Length: 86
Image 1 (cartoon, rainbow, N blue to C red):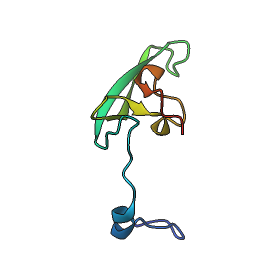
Image 2: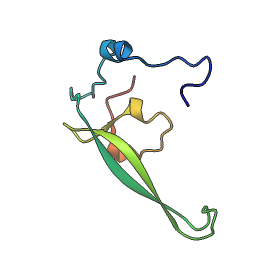
Image 3: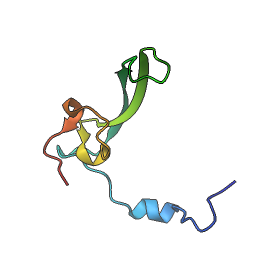
């Protein structure tokens, strides 16, 4: 299928020259974790309590998420690294 017409493709050269994402604690390794949000029956489209799993990336060193990885604010504040504000 390929990339949409006119879309730029990320090449191996671009990846090699890209800067590593660094956490505020200095960590550069990341782990996949999952949180589960409970949706109230009042807000649920089914009218029943729903559980919504969310995959998140956390720093392997400190276990927190840099603010840069939470642009929409969906991850609870208790998991966000506070000093990351750029």
